[in-house]
Each structure stands twice: as C-alpha cells, then as structure tokens.
Image (cartoon, rainbow, N blue to C red; front, side, top):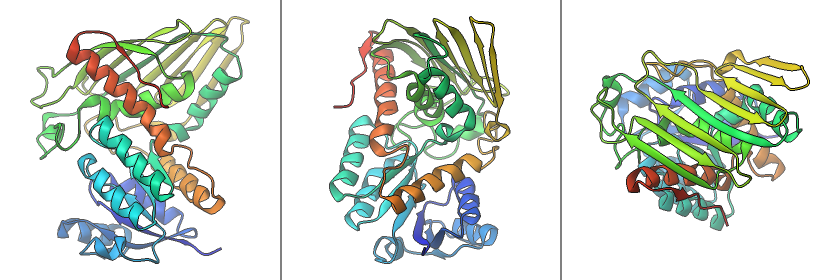
Length: 344
C-alpha cells in the first residue's frame, strides 16, 4: 500500500508530538512539506525532525498529490484554512479547538461535510487505555445508573505563558482555560457519561494572572436522568496537578486521575489500571508529555482514510464539547443557568 502524502501547516509549540508521531509512522505517511510563516521555525523543524519544509502554503494547498493536511495553527485561523483545504479535496487532521467560537466551529465542520472530506480533531485523551477502560466500565453497566459525573483540572501556567502574543485572548484563542486546557478532560467526560442538559457556572480571571480571558472556572451540570456533577478548571494551581474525572453510579464509583484509573464496586470488587504515557503537561511546560496518544490519533486518522470510515473524533463529535464550553461561558456571563444545545 502506498503511503499517504501529507502536508503540515503550523510549526509552533504543538508541532513536536505530531512530528514525532509522523516519524514513528513513516511507513504509512510521507510528509511532503511543512509550513510556517516564520523562517526560524521552519529551520528548527527541518533540523530537529529531518522533514521537508516550504516557504509558501500554496505549495501544500495547491499540490494535488497531497492527500491530507495536518493543521496546527492558532484557533482563529482554523475556519479559513479548513475551507481552503476542503476546497482542494484534502482530508484534514485539526489540532483542537475547532475554532474560537461555536459559530465558527459549526461553519468549519459544515465546510468539511460539504466537500466530502474527512475531518479528524486532535483530542488525544480519548485514545488513552485508561479512558477506554473507563468508558467500558460505564457502558458495561459495572457502575450502574449514572448518579454524578465531575471534572477537576488543576493546571499551572506562569505569567510568562500568557505574555506570549495572542495567548489567552478572545481574538486568537477564543477563550482561556476551558477552550485551551480543560477541553480535553471535558471532551473525555461527555464521551463517557454523555452530554449534560443544563449548566451553571462562574468564570473569572484570578489575581494570579494578567490576561483577557478566564483562568478559573467553577460550574455545575445536570444530566437528563437527574444526575448532577461539577466542573472546576484553572491554570493558577501551582505547581500543577493531575486532571481527574469522577463517575458515581448506583453500583460503584470510578476515578480517572492523571495516569491512574480505579474503580470500587458495591459487590466488594475493585478495578485498577495505569497508563504511564498519560502524565505530564499540567505544569509550567505544557508539552511535557509522551507523544504516544498523538500517534494513536494519527493512526486512527490514517485508518479512517484507508478504510473510508470516519475518524474516532470527527468534526461533529468535537462540536459536542464546544457546545458544552459555550454553555458554561454563557452561564457565567449571564449569571443564569443555560441549556446545552444538543446536536441536530
């Protein structure tokens, strides 16, 4: 089988785990060219990974031999770039979030749909073995009926992180801790427990940081079956701690915290699993983690193209967490509970 020919757009901080994944999967994918508008980034990428670069994105978008594009650019560029790639018939693997607003995210997904191209989204927590095991505990009925589902994200980012141009702004990033950090854990929660139907929240900028958007959120969720849960997320928790998901059911409780999943059940049995590749990234260095789950995302994307199936986290699936984040921020802005709009 011939290798898939791929172009990379965006060579900033997020490029490292993707580049290592591309090298690991060199027998399945060929990087034709990688682009950044910054010469220094192009040179560093070529030096570090031995992959070819180009000085003009047209060399990727207009190259008919390129099958797919990996987009790693800031969120506010995603819609226009996805539209351009889709118009050229190229499949797209997109770094989260979809875009800076729910409206733009929906337009982005619609553009890929209209062009008939695959759109995969990099929400790599879905690909952790512990995440799959947690989902099976819920789907398999080990926990019984859902009683509560909660998320806790206690990250640390120093002020220097937000001093970078555009970081944590509405214009470039679309938001703060929810859309940039907590999106991974929230996405995993709703993939396991389902989408809440109603939320309420507070979202503030704490005295720890000077930034435009929120670095501290506290919220509550209600699900259709009457279950409730909480959302707490921050980047002001020095020095950074593992994120956690708690699922409580009528037959037991499961906790996914950092690398470890544990379950305890009313019948006296227990469940334990650890994933060493899941740690890191909660402190001052947001890229301090293994690339193995990014490799799993890329593998799934390649499989989807080869087998004509959809990626595990396709555009429509990623829209769910965007709708939840939008509802939490609207609740914080209005001071009133908000319905979470389901996908049509």
